[in-house]
Length: 409
Image 1 (cartoon, rainbow, N blue to C red):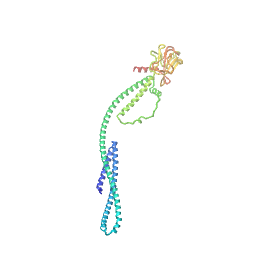
Image 2: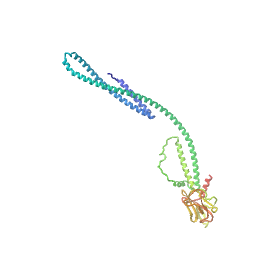
Image 3: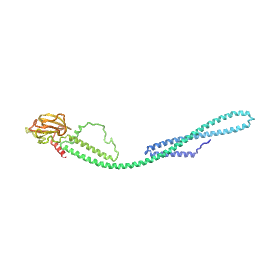
Image 4: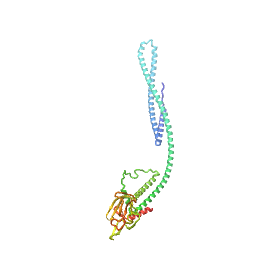
């Protein structure tokens, strides 16, 4: 029979080793848990193995205590066996003379045999426990070896992660430098586009002002015609947060450019509806817009259009795209064509000889709509040309002046 005794120093040394290993594992885990999820998983596995190791140490201590108790019992039984053997020797010397005493000792011998059998059973149990303990120790050694290999692999992976991190940081700095240069170049392009857009917008706005209309009022009227929109309300700044990247300034410039382009598109849409051209190819102004003497009674009266003298049956053209809203005879106007161009803008063509369009017909710019005549209250062949905006007449000469500015530009 053999047993293992661990001195207090050895136990303290083992405890210190376990504490040192636990401290090193905690230090490694806290140092690199933010750098690598794999390292965190490994450290967690190591901590679990160490807990298992401590549990095995506690079990080993319990087995050692149990082994010590069994050893004491074996010693007691051994002393008892020695005493019985000495007693048996004395009995054998007196066997011939003391048969009656031998009979009395047979019961005691049977008890000793029974005790010896019981002791053998206890010994077999102790041997099984020692074998299981040896297997556990072997498994524990294997686990410790695996832990050491995992630690080496973790350290290697950590070093590789640190190297990759440094390399990626250098690449990020290079990309930031390139992004800054690219942003500067794109910023210049966006700035030039913005300046060109603002210049075009101002030119279009000038055309509208020459025609005698208010730009904001006209854009508002045009916006009312395109309100079929929808979607959630997202306040600017809530959908996207500033990330502090170099492209922040470029994004603001692009937003400004988009606003300018939207205004330019609105003005372009408005200009497409404005009647900026002349309805006749060849003409002379015989009566202007505003206050004049009536050609029949020579009394002062208000003239809401202009009279354009020309060749009888000359072609009359639409001055902007739109939809015909009236065709026929209309009192003093004689034969008349009225076209709606949207945003509250209408044109009227009176004193016609004949009409070439129908009500509801869509008209394109410069489509032939009628022939010049002298129908209605007229003194001769001419065209009464009238422009109406939101129910009020406007001077067509201003619109044609704005048209000449556009075509000359």
